[in-house]
Length: 135
Image 1 (cartoon, rainbow, N blue to C red):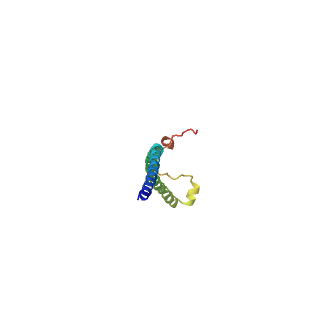
Image 2 (cartoon, one colour):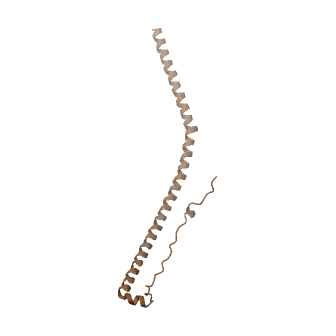
Image 3 (cartoon, rainbow, N blue to C red):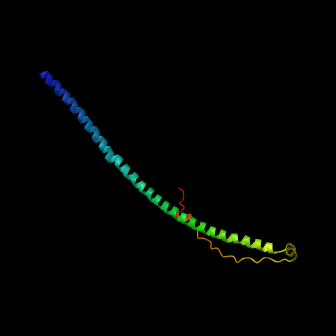
């Protein structure tokens, strides 16, 4: 009976030693996580916040460029529409003129009143992305 009790105690001591070893490993892992990994994760999250801010700024820039391009497309469409009326006016003038009359008289056809097109205000990328000197 004593031998059986000693075996059982030795087995229990072995298990307790294994358990203590596991606890030490867990403590070491926990201290490594708390002291090393957690600060690294925190630093990376700060870096990611800066990247998110840059992405937000880039999104607003893209929206602004899209609005400018849309406005410019509207102006181009309007100018193209006005330019299409000029060839039609010239065709009418040439049809009503005689070829011989055109050669004998150096007259110039009356030009249609040209409408003044405003030059659109174009953004500068340097205003949004300042040039930084290379290190």
